[in-house]
Amino acid sequence: MPPEATPAPVRVLTVASGKGGVGKTNVSVNLATALAALGERVMLLDADFGLANVDVLLGLTPKQTLADVVAGRATLAEVILPGPRGLQIVPSSSGKRHMAEMTPQQHAGIVQAVSTYEGPLDTLIVDTAAGINDAVLTFCQAAQEVLVVVCDEPASITDAYALVKVLCRERGIQRVHVIANMVRSPVEGRALYDKLARVVEKFLPEASLAYLGAIPQDDALRRAVQKQKPVVEAFPSAQASAAFRELATRIHRWARATTPRGHIEFFVERMLEAGGARA
Image (tube, rainbow, N blue to C red; front, top):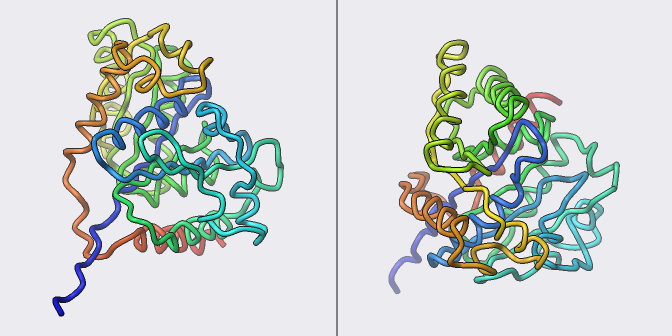
């Protein structure tokens, strides 16, 4: 019999933002859906443990969540919900303080549960909470690529810089991809990135920013949220949908990790290392 093929390494992307209200979760949901539409097998993990809302944006009603996995009442496979285009949703809980106050070791335990998932998987997208709490930093540190969502507001730019600074100087993450959200034009999106890049270049020269692209301000996004569907599915011809598909295509073309292991073993190991370092 021919030897069994080694599963390709899973690409892990963490989506973060310095400030709340910049549309980070909407970006996560639509990027995940657009990647799934390209034929990727995608899992979206809701890692906003205090105010989870991926399931709300998709009109899903989970019977069990990651809180049940943490408590030992369910396995990961039992809480996964089917989303559009075959997207696999791992819902979290909202309004449960003990979930928002988990230790790094507990965060690692969640990812350990994800690693036992035996279904085929190409990309894991982790939607984090806004800000720079320990869970956000740990999930960023464990991922291969970090996507920071920013909008054209002074507080958003300032907080995005603060996030990049902490990721770089405290967690050793020097490469960050920037998504400009809710902009009026591609020119405004690029200008927004340039503002952030200039500050980083001046005060944080060891960090490297890359511009992934922009999502326009589009009323179709608001209407899609009301319909509890991704805009790429609800209004595929909308400008925002085209922008999400373009970003997904760019990510789809990124080189895969060269780690010769399948699933997300490396992710679990790095989570455990990060947790142990601060234990």
